[in-house]
Image (cartoon, rainbow, N blue to C red):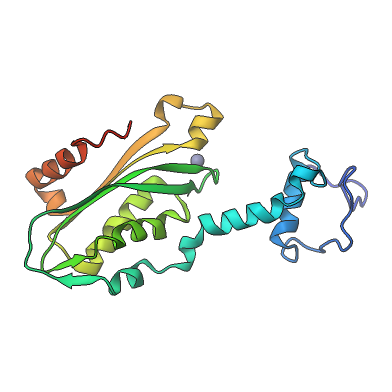
Length: 215
Ligand SMILES: [Zn+2]
């Protein structure tokens, strides 16, 4: 932004210059980048409350994006079981926390997953882990919904899969835009959940039953 004026090399005002200033952005550590961000936001990174903030933010961001380190299909591999059960399996009200990729602000809510097995089921405890593996990345709610559904589809090839996510977006709530649209519902229906209205209706009515989560 703006033209650089006559060879000015350091635009820091008032802040203490670190002993060794990184030469380029890629050379800078994440902590250094976050310190610089604090300065640009008008803060003094040397004041007591902020001294360890770059370190904390780095750790928080690593945690919130650790899904990049996980392979969702690999995660399911050890937890597939052969069954003759062919009724709907439903896991609902799974807590979900993610970061929107447009603002890197949280969106969070509930995920409901259902499928009708065709010979194989997924260990129930793996569903929340699968959701986390996709949610702990920079996301948009629509893609998160589809990725969960498609991963289950490809892991066990069931009759059908349905995923519904109800979430609230801090980027809308905190910035005061479209407050009335700060919560969104997305769904992804595959196989019989897409083709058969009765199956879809059964799923949706099971979700609605005593969920009482304020959405
Ligand atoms: Zn956003």
